[in-house]
Image (cartoon, rainbow, N blue to C red; front, side, top):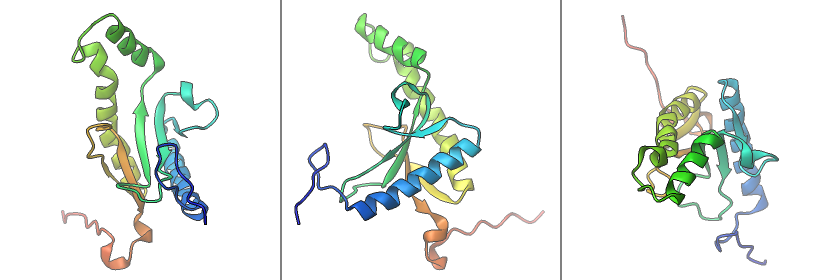
Length: 156
């Protein structure tokens, strides 16, 4: 069997594995859209110019993290202002340059809460390259009963 590589030089997951990850990504898109957010899969038609929740599927055979992740893309005006500021020599820590990342970090908590409320296991990214991303691991109903989180409301 020939070893298929991803664009980054890693072994690619089997088509069956990628299909399961894609199905999870589609569920994430649907949950976020039902919450009223713009959400779309990376690489979908027209996605390069869209703002909102961008859902990524990891096609690597060995994932060092989650098979699906979510990032927040602000409006192109905000992103272009940051690019223009950097191009004109403004420092990396200038407010206009930091704004896209700051927006992403603020959206991260909301995205996680929305996904968790729909039974999707999501958590903060622990990576300095994409600190504002959300990691998605699956659905709580896919866990064995002993590992499912139990949310018991406080007695009033």
